[in-house]
Every structure is written in structure tokens, then in C-alpha cells.
Amino acid sequence: MSDLMRFGVSLEKNLLKDFDRLTAAREYSNRSEAIRDLIRNSLVEDEWKKGKDVAGAISLVYDHHKRELMNVIVEIQHDYQDTIVASQHVHLDHHNCLEVIIVKGKSDHIKKLSDRLRAVRGVKHGSLTLTTLGKEL
Image 1 (tube, rainbow, N blue to C red):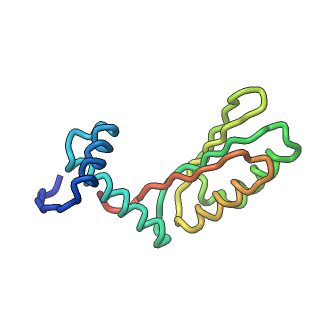
Image 2: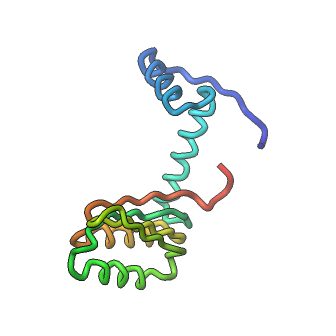
Image 3: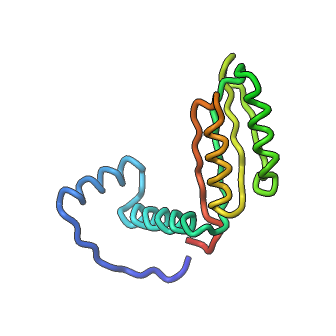
């Protein structure tokens, strides 16, 4: 770890009380760890917005009984084979499947892929989770 720097933060009493509840609920060992995590998350989000290289996962839940749904999902994935690292298909129950697609590349390109997949008729829910490939945060 690099050199630690200390700084002071002034917060309203109620905001600090809420922050302490959040810190405890997320099981951080102290406020500093929680603040570091919030800062890292903000920096990662900034990288996504700047179109930098990122890695992540697109999760889709869909009804596999919908006609042509699987073909459309696979066809879209083939259009982005330079971005998709791997995918995992899981049967949740008789009707629902979960597909997790691991991605790596430019954030704007990954966002387009995610948007296309989530817009497919029959996809019940989709989410995109990204993280940085950049310098250590």
C-alpha cells in the first residue's frame, strides 16, 4: 500500500449518523475503509463515463420458452465477440434462465451491448456491472 495521508471531513450530525449506520451494515472495520470504498467507486464510475477500458458482467434473466429469444441473444453476442470473454448459462427453473456474460473492452461499447441484450423481447431483467482495469485504486 502507498503512503497513507490523513485529512479531516466535516459532516452534519445526521449525515454522519446515517453514514455510521451504512458503515456498520456493510461491515466495514472503520469509517476510513468505507470512505476509501466510496472514493474508489466514484473513480471507477468516472472511468466508465470516459469510455476507458473496463471489465464486467452483464446478467440477464429470461424465459427460454419465448420463440427465437435464444437465437437473438446468441446473434447479438456474436456481433460483440471481440468484447465477450465468456458466458455462463444457468437454468433457474422450468421457465427462467440466467445468462452471465463476462465482458472486457471500452465502456461505451460494453454499454451498447448491454442495452441491446436487455432490450430483447422476453428478457425479464438485465443488469450491467463494470469495474476498472486501470491503475490500482
